[in-house]
Image (cartoon, rainbow over the protein chains, first blue to last red):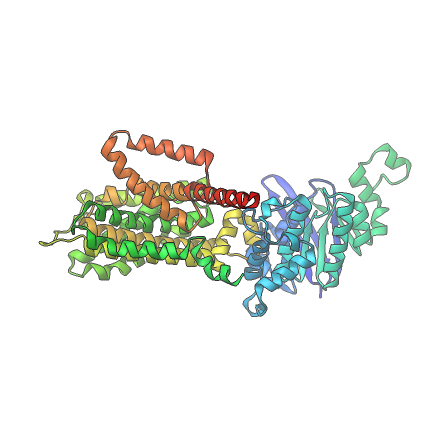
Amino acid sequence: MALLEVKSITKKFGGLMAIRDVSFKVETDQILGLIGPNGAGKTTIFNLLSGVCRPNRGEIFYKGTPILSLKAHQVCRLGIARTYQIVKPFSNMKVIDNVKVALFFGHKLKDRHTDETEESESILDFIGLSSKANSLAKSLTLVDRKRLEIARALATHPDLLLLDEVIAGLTPTEVLHMVDLIRKIHRKRITILMIEHVMRVIMELCDEIIVLDHGELIARGAPQAISTNPAVINAYLGSTNAGRERGLGKA
Amino acid sequence: MKSSQNRSWLFGANPSYLLAGIGILLLLPLFLPKNHYLLHIAIMSSINVIMSCGWNILSGLTGQTSFAHCIFFGVGAYTTALLWLGGIHPYWTIPLAGVAAALYAILIGIPCLRLRGPFFVIGTLAAGEVTRIIANNLEWIGGAAGLSIPPPSSYSKLPDYYLTFLCALGTIAISAKVIQSRFGMALSAIRENYEAAETVGIDTTRFQIYALCISGLVVGIAGSLYVQYIFYALPDKVFGFDTSISMILMTVIGGIGTLWGPVLGAILFFILEEFLLGYFPSLHLGIYGLILMILVLFKPGGILNLLENLRLRSFYGLARSKEHH
């Protein structure tokens, strides 16, 4: 059984068809990449998965149970954590308290047996933010804010982690660290679904990629296959002459 | 580390000063005639402290500015007035007034707390006005004339002084407990970022309703104490827009979202009000507005923040001068 199964979801924003009949599965323990041009509906998919908004049609199953009727906080408690592309730290709270809140409320009561302060410190240590534990979240740099987003998501003890462009906007060194971090998270047996624009990273990290364009799923496959898929190239570069000359233009 | 943890419930207040302050306030009336003007100021300040701390629990912590809190004050006031007229000793009506206000809070919270920002403000404004108009027109609770309680033949401000003082202390304790708890942390998270709070597992609507409930309970108790002191529940006063505004002003002037800010703000607010009303009877609201504008522009953290900065500055100043010698 797939960890997460999305069955033909459709989402309209007024007259705009943001997501049109998209189905895919996320298998346990994989790193699945979700790519697509700007406005393809990637973040909308995340919003639908995490319960921030609801699709007009379709179904979503997590570990076999339907989660569509659940609110965001309930989805989180089931074990799906997410980060936001535009980071949303609790600015006027300490970094460690940001993590603690997630630890207190992000998972079901029965899991609470360890000391929260200790656990949040170990999460910050894992993520590389322990030196800033006591500063206010608003004083962090962009890369640290992205780290904090991940730390907060990890604190909810997820089985499935949705990463929304955690790499975009980072310097090359920071990118390397972030890739390492994602690998470390994956090694903790957390399944990852990630949206990313930086192709090199996606190719390196993911064992499978799905491609979204204008709200429709246009391709799914291994990174190598995706990079040569004519439909994908068409979506990214348009059906230009250059594309046709190489025989890649027609989807 | 240990000692700072033990003291964290004081929120930066020096425990010996605090105890001394409580002691002085408890003994103060012994040195005053039983109906001294200072007692009046103390009683009204205590009631104000309860109101502003109550308002702060919802609006200060979650960032949802409520204009509906006059309702809870009024419901508390009317509950006590009605039960008192019905022959029940007013002290027994205090918890009932609190509970009635809390129930009303749930009633208002369920529709209003789905809204955020300016929409919540408008929702609560409407709820407040509607309640005031209803109270003005319900004949069995006195209509526009309100409810007045025949004052007793012999009268002393002392019991009221101690009652309001203890209730104010209790309120400060409750709000300290709330601010420090996990629940308080969740409320702060909601204030900082509503969506992120929801995605880390906080049931934002429910938590805000709980906060509103506690907040309403506390303000309801303030209403009850007010009637017990004034012997009169006038709908346009207790359900009035001004009552909500004064709660907001007190909290913002003192320091919104903190423990001691609303306390400080409430006391200053009342003393200032008495002073301004005495010396500039037609200008006092204007002067208020001015003070508030200056504060919000230059010190949005309120007077508490101002004092903290001064204290830090003098502390660092001291440290520097020691280094030099």
